[in-house]
Amino acid sequence: MIVATTFHLMTPPLLLVLLLVFFGRWWLRREKKTRIPKLFRPFEPLSDEDMPKHTTEIYRDQYRRYKVPKNVDVIVIGSGISGLTCAGLLARTGRRVLVLEQHYIAGGATHTFDEQGFEFDTGVHYIGNVSQRKPQFGRTFLLHFNVDFVSHSIMDLITEGGFEWDKLGQNPHDLNDVYDEISIGGNIYPLRAGRESFIEDLVKHFPKEREAIEKWVYLCRDASRQDIYFKLKIVRPAWLARLLLWLSGKKFYSYLNMTALEAAQSVTNNTELQAVLLGQFGDHGQTPSKANFFMHASVVNHYIRGGFYPRGGSMEFAKKITPVIERAGGRVLVKQAVNQILIEDNACIGVEMACGDVIHAETVISSAGVFNTYERLLPRDYAPDVILDKLEAIGPSCSMVYLFVGMTASTEELKLRSSNIWHYPHSDFDKVLEDVGVDPENAPLPLFIGFPSAKDSTWTERHGITSTAVILTMCPSTVWDDWQDTTQGKRGIDYEAKKEMLGKRMLDGLFSYYPQCRGKVTYTDVGSSLTFNHYLNSIRGEVYGLANHSLRFLPNDWLRPETHVKNLYLTGQDIVTVGVTGALTAGVLTAHAVLGYGSLGDVLRYITLSFRHHTVS
Image 1 (cartoon, helix red, strand yellow):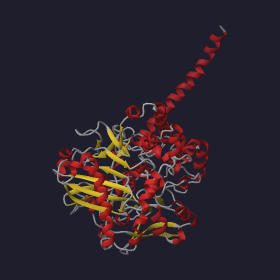
Image 2 (cartoon, rainbow, N blue to C red; image 1 turned 135 degrees about the vertical axis):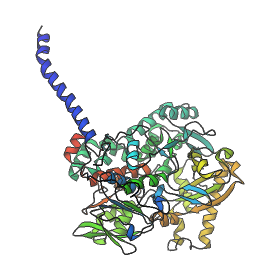
Image 3 (cartoon, rainbow, N blue to C red; image 1 turned 180 degrees about the vertical axis):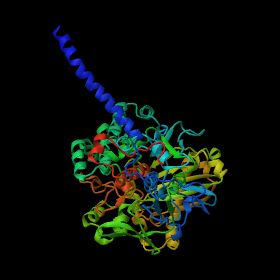
Image 4 (cartoon, rainbow, N blue to C red; image 1 turned 90 degrees about the vertical axis):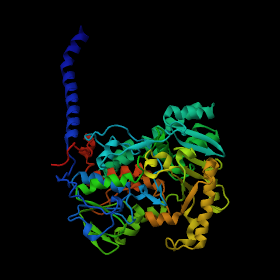
């Protein structure tokens, strides 16, 4: 009786609280779905008739002063995926964005090039964790956004015409759903999409190691979810971000302070299995004994649901994002470098071009990498010594030698698989790379072997009966030091001989897995660290920007989108994590920062950049 009476007396207050919670949550969801972005500027999008007229492909629009839009709101330096993503999102909020690119083609490491009828990708060899969900324009992005997650919502926002993906492991000659093949000393271990498939396939090779493999998958999943450090990059003031990190970042740092090798050793003593679990380290560029486990776990978890390739090739990024920028009155212009970022009264006011043109804007975003930004583009007085010292201490990431192979036979005839091969002569990865650095002519080479023609379902329609391979080997940039001060195309016969030697050795690696390709190769070209410097404006041929050093992840974060100079922002993989999805995420973060997101109120209400179906009024 007493219990019943008490329950009766407590029910109305409890019901009231539950109703308030229910309606509060309903109102917040509804309000977020209907809210236009912060600092939104109503604009009338250009009609098809008023859009810029191009005499060549839209991603080859060469810089001319008369093409620069009037009253530019935002200048983005660099047209990689981070710069294009940020520019596309800001264009959707009514900004007139000018993207400036020093290369003759837009896209950064997502661009492709054509030679003798063959198309080659340069940086997008596969992408993981692609969401197949339909776009939901009212969904929030950031606080529900994983740093290695490619969402259709974002891609549909920043592109015109939609974006489609082909999943690796679906062709007739493929191993079903396999995205990577780890080859160690001649033993091949396929990695198949799906956690259960990943586990069961490895258990077949290591029947006594089920518990270790399951634990590894769990650890990688748990570590990759500790991405609060990156979500806090836009929270302001900075002390609030540090406080929230102190409250919630302990697990992140526990994984960050553990090497990938230590993590593998914690689950198994089997050195062959350790090597297989660590065999994707080329995707982040540090050997497992040096790489932090958070980074390696993020790579493993990123691909564990499968590998994907942009349908139509990776040039689709620039091809489909550029019209969104132009629709809002902006432009993507190439083949003219920015010479300097202009500062006045400690505020960024625009840029000076290599040709001498000065372009003003209220906001400048550097997607050129932190080395270029602080060491080349900013006036020395505005490049703090404390940041320059950190850059010197961290240094650049790994460099690679590229071999581009064109073949006059179809993927079907050559029975090429869409899965990539990670080839290692043995399981001591540190020694493998040390040997290559000492004796690149004779040391066994580690190789990445991939076939763009097998990954893209539109290939035959676009390129006929041809096939291509892109082969990489990790090779220190010091191998090319003798030609550091030479110019592209004029480096001399000794340089060309070294490239030819490495190219032949890499081609032999291809033939060892696909002997049927012998006699079908009609085109090859080798790209060195110096080639990378020339076309992508790197410093030492680094393919992943800054090295994954612990100084990148200090509690007092110095790699935030917002810089110490008013109206100057950073974006790109250097401020988040490596690779295409890291760079794409950086573009989203920087767009948030430019639009003023990250206040305490935003954090409390989980408010991030969201769009209604119609952002134009």
